[in-house]
Image (cartoon, rainbow, N blue to C red):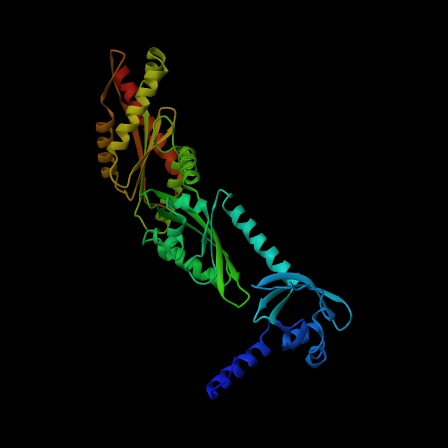
Length: 406
């Protein structure tokens, strides 16, 4: 380069200063003689630049430069350290003119480490796309740089639509603050788990478990890596199991365990003065054994189902019917503390339940004996409330038998 102006000289000086102080190890060679090296090369060889300049290239390295170097080439060899040991290096040789070239030296161990890291990352991406769980990560903030194929399958959308904030956009607005708060906690160093309803690009709603872990990069930027697991089917199975544990499979009514749990809750509400009283109604079907024995179990099951439906539909808001055992049912009426009102409720239940049922050309009329106990005293235990309602029902049943026999 021919320098003709002061600005050209300043530019050349700036360029020389940059090359001298850059972290890349550089060697300038003319006709196989070293005419200049920068500080990084001197440091790498642990030798002063003045002691290296003027030497032949083959005195400090085993790199063999092609006779004619028409374009940049990657070469490998060894560099001689001041201690006499040789350092494996890679060299990018770039021709500058017919006789000059610039060599950029890289420790091969460093190169191999970068290469190995690249291979490791590639293997990781391949593995991430084979795992049957959604995977995504971000190097900084809420925006993702990577999403695997299974996440796209969960969202029912191409991978590219999930990058950036696309993975959040499909979360319904009511649930979006939950995942945003989880990510912000993660960025502060906390592993978070969140179950959120997701509306896929096709409009399907899925229940997704997001697990997000923090990642702090070398320069201190906070990012995260996360997994998304479709737990829709699992949640459905759990709901079905929970329902089965607390409901009678024949009638669909809550079972005895559910009734006792609710009765304890109502009793606690009475103790806390949240309600003024509780009424427990006990019902036993009349002549059920006769129907079951004469017409068979299918007829008996039909009677139980119809009786349960009658009680269910006859309940007032806030009251609930349960199958207690066999042909016995219980209705809980929280907040009802007046016996007259309890009597009215029983009449409504009887009217709803006692209807004819046609089975195998036979008409069967459902009827039941009802008893109740009403209390405003929290000192009376839930078990005692139930026992007194049972005793009341038994008294009604006995009185009915005596009346018919008489």
